[in-house]
Amino acid sequence: NKKDERGIVIRNKARLVAQGHTQEEGIDYKEVFAPVARIEAIRLFLAYTSFMGFPVYQMDVKSAFLYGTIEEEVYVCQPPGFKDPEKSEKVYKVVKALYGLHQAPRAWYKTLATYLLENRFQRRTIDQTLFIKKQQKDILLDSDGKDVDVHTYKSMIGSLMYLTSSRPDIMF
Image (cartoon, rainbow, N blue to C red; front, top):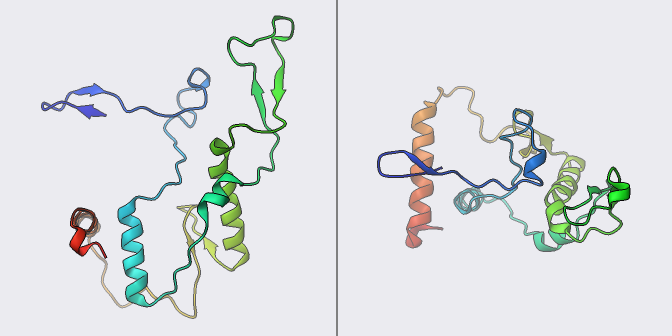
């Protein structure tokens, strides 16, 4: 929400929904599916992989995004202004989706998830978009180490992300 200098909300955030009038409060009302990574997270990931000497592979995301396969049948209600008064209860079955980009993120994610699972990656239970491939032993787990203060850790990571995105000379 956009707030003024006193902290009073002057404008609410816009949320993209399929059809706002069909939403019911309390049922996935605040859930948003947006598979977009922040540039700071990508830079941090690339810096870490470079430091550790891991190979990095590039995928053609544009093609996968645009030409994603959709297995489900798609039905749409009659749009306002084009309703047939004699068949007001009918819906349309989409033969060819003209709005493929709206469906492509989920189709692309499903294809990527299938590929990762077939290649022995494991999906995490808490974050379904996180996949980990275990090697002979964990590279990040130190069982003898002491626990890190979560607030200090988050503060440090946030500071580093801000620093790397705001200073071009130390981005990489």
